[in-house]
Image 1 (spheres, one colour):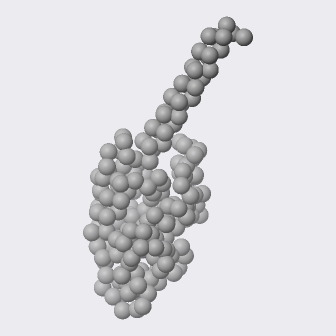
Image 2 (cartoon, one colour):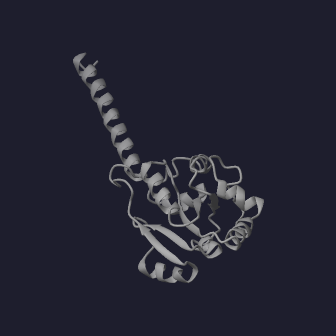
Image 3 (tube, rainbow, N blue to C red):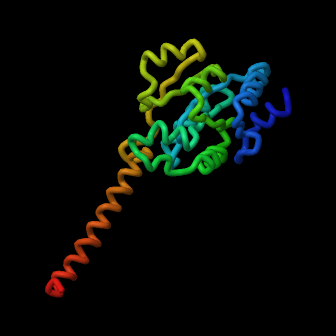
Length: 201
């Protein structure tokens, strides 16, 4: 077993030895892992405003094989995919998102997905024994899943691991904006009340 593979398997918290942004380097590491007899699990996403549902999902994914690889969307890719719906995304910058992921011992490798990558590039490179997909990810249609089976040993769908109407990033942002709007309305009402009580002067 190479020192690199040994370091990855030992895991720990932090990004040292865990973050592999270059896909060429990642391909070589995956080859070493496979040559050493370890099974690879892959999942990918944004992981913005990290919450308990993310943690439970990733921990569940890690139990499906020996090495969990997490592909994280860059800020540019996140804006490209989510910006039309919400121009404020990502709420947390890429560096903050991967630092939180790096603190989790069960995540062995983190890599970056760029705007110049095709949506399937990471999957085709890693060719995981298990590809983990959230059931809430609309882009993974039955047709897309059938196409990806060529590159994966197995495709597993995981349910949302927390209430999506309360815990998800979208739900949290919606709640923050709603509460902010209520606070602004209350301030406006107070100012108007004071103005009217003074006779509109």
